[in-house]
Amino acid sequence: MTRRMFKILVFSFILTGLFLFPASAKDSPETLLAKLPAEIGAFKLSGNVEVYDEKAMGASLGYDNFDAGTSLTIYLYDLGQTDIADGIDSLVITQAKDEAIKEVEAVASEYGLYKDVKVLTDEKSEIAADGGSAVKILRTCFTYEMVNPDNGESMGWQDSYMYVTGLKGYVCKFRATGPRGTDEGGIKRVVKGVLAALVK
Image (cartoon, rainbow, N blue to C red; front, top):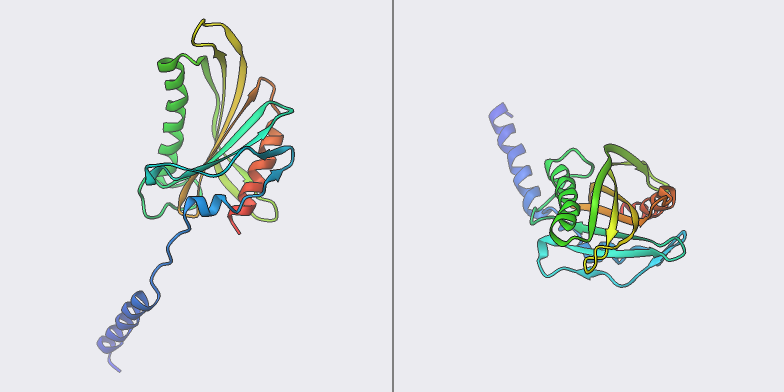
């Protein structure tokens, strides 16, 4: 067999594979979120999966720890992109994190619900999913004062944590908020549990 014939044969196999074994479609955000447990540690589901009208914005699911006054929401969305790489190295993940920071600052400036927003930490980190390898994340920590927009009175200081990574073809974003001094360890346990369920 000549080298030219070999190349033609290999190319034929590649084309055949593309037609016979097309790339499998990724699960929808609501399908993935529906896999999550009803309770993780002290956090319990606060409702059903919310699917947004704009498909590119995906879906979300919330958990609450009422005793600690802490809430956590998981968002899965792809911004209309067909595939987003796992981890934190793709530009879309960095942009998603930057946009989320701007959203928090916009709530403060446009709606007057927060004031004195401070980004305390903005870094690369990782969280070990239960029973699995470590997942690289972008971790951002905020603090701000909640304000009653009607009279400007303080409603107390809040700590807020955000974790962003690429997972299953989506931007996977966690946003948790609680009173000042909130235990991040408890939040990370929920994140670990969610990641473990999603990566299966």
